[in-house]
Length: 463
Image (cartoon, rainbow, N blue to C red):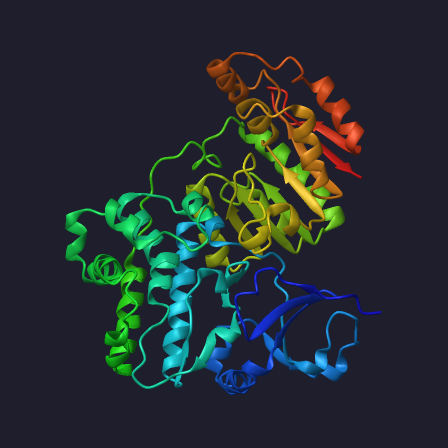
């Protein structure tokens, strides 16, 4: 029996359509005012150069859907989209992932213009990633091109894509927490305040940031916009504008600065045999079970995420708060075409439900759906570095999936010792006996193994 549909909280902005979730399917219901655009989009999707850039989509006959008390499907035309395993957001993306999303958006827009179509907006949330592969998901943002029209999404593109990329490339300013606090991105006036005079000598920065900011200030609050309506933009200039912007973004480089954990996979406290012991324990457990959806907490550059994939697991979501490591992990996933989605994530301040009515963008807990969690060299960063009570740490980790491996790092370990030097040993409950007791309260310990001379222990568990 078909379940009642759940309306996607982020689809309210489109007056012509809404997205619903039903029976693990993603349906886009097109209202009568969007019927003409629906037919146009169907024709556009017949073009392979466009179809390859958007989410896999097909038309659904409303008669094939079981009627329910909430929605009368016969009132709509319907697209069904392929379901993406994990929805991610721009504030979770590393520099190169955001850059690839921007280039993908521009590539699609250029292909549309060449087929007499355009985009009505330019939100970075319209791009999603199927692991390493960017896809455009908001098909109702596509419309027929009108001769001479301006780029209506220009400002939105700059604030969603260009401004954060320029700030990181030119000044080393990360976009993530800024973007998390403003779903529209980084506004142009703030960007101008941070950039230097020398940056104006770049035509693309001058035109798309400084000049755009000038006109925004000049015409702010003025109702008379006839001057815009009278001007016409040739399609050739429109295409040139998008192409130049794409070439400029392609040339932006990640301004890499040294971070604490950026080189952890190479620079750590494990001796060679200790590392082999750890890898073998993890690999043996995963080979026996071959879990489908893995969560790798503190994934760094993806070393153990890739080990999980090589051990027969299907997909890995990797989370880490070190942006250098996450960017390296993304490039590994992209270059090797892996089923690996590494994202920026601060566990002590996870993404929450945000946007209109706190329902527009789902928080981490609402998006979580994992079979197995890897928490390697991780728990002490919360219990010691962040002062989060050990019972809360273990309870949170074991709630993420019914199976997992967690590594206990004792106070004798050099890493914990360096943490304790900064704040003193104010953690009397942080010890192996208490750790095992707490773990047993939350789940069943399957196996354990000491893997280092400092007393690090791996525990596999299940609920």
